[in-house]
Amino acid sequence: MIEKQHWHPVIAAEAVGTAPVAARLLEEDLVLWRDGAGQLHAWSDRCPHRGAKLSLGRVEGDRLECAYHGWQFDAEARCRHVPALPDFVPPAGHRAQAYEVCEAHGLAWVRLAPGNVPLPAFAAEGDARLRKLNCGPYDVHASAPRVVENFLDLTHFAFVHEGWLGARGAAAVDAYRVEETPTGLRATECRAWQPQSNLHSTAPAQVEYTYEVTGPYAGVLTKIPEAGTVAVADWNEAIALFICPLEPERCRVWFRLAVADFESPDDKLRAFQDTIFRQDQPVLESQRPKRLPLDLRAELHTAADRASAMYRRHLSKLGITFGVL
Ligand code: FES
Ligand code: CO
Image 1 (tube, protein in one colour):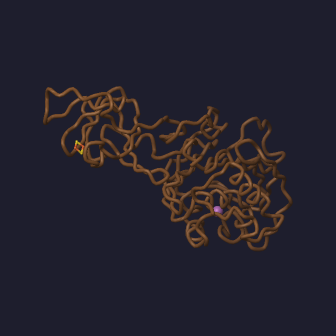
Image 2 (cartoon, protein in one colour):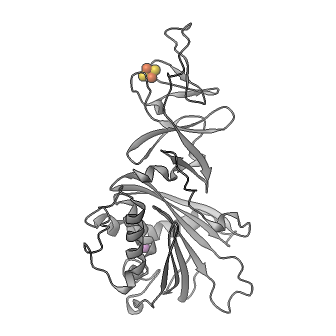
Image 3 (cartoon, rainbow, N blue to C red):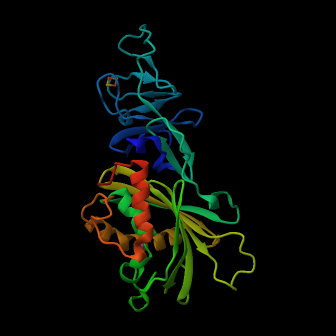
């Protein structure tokens, strides 16, 4: 499964404290924990002794202790102590299954198989003039690729987000450009007339976005400042979409905001994203088939759907099988 060679977000980094926590990725149960030095670990959530969940255990110094018989595993996942046989020295093969893990964008990312694809890029992350804030997670009964397509889709604003990101009377979408990139695609000159494009909108505005697919289940939306309203536009607000594919038809979604607003409380910024995503969710969960059909003949497309058609072609090319048909 090629998607195992990609990094995926599994949990908020701050949610992994001194107690082990369970997560799930590509139908694998995981346990995440931090050792005494704060170093993050992600293992299969299965004790190699009798198969109990390691996430039921506890951290003892630099070791994770299984809740069932107290076996202790060190930071390299090697069993170091079997309480029932205190003098026994476990051989090197007595170990839990460890995976690669790293922290980025406020999330813990896991790669289940060795690979050379970097983390999904998010250029705004490093810009100190923008505030970063995660929204979610949203647990959705939809496949991750359906959620990516919804993120790329300008043509639903007038209906799903009527009064917020669109209006029925202004549903027409101008032609936009789409080009393929190594990680997916870039769609530029995406314009929409939006009554309430963000928390602070006081009047409708014509907004322009660039969309990028940055990984099989990841994307970035960048807001292009309106001409004439921003004197120096060398930074752009952006929103990254990061999805954990839990099951082929179930996923966990985060949005990472990079915004110029340093004033509004976190809760207010999150409430706006929650409102928008809760409008998308029932439609996403209603889509059939739940898995995204990569055969372009399976659903109908128009020129306004060029971005999603290219996304499907890209997933085919990569050989993605999880969450697609
Ligand atoms: Fe984990 Fe026995 S099942 S110590
Ligand atoms: Co939407």
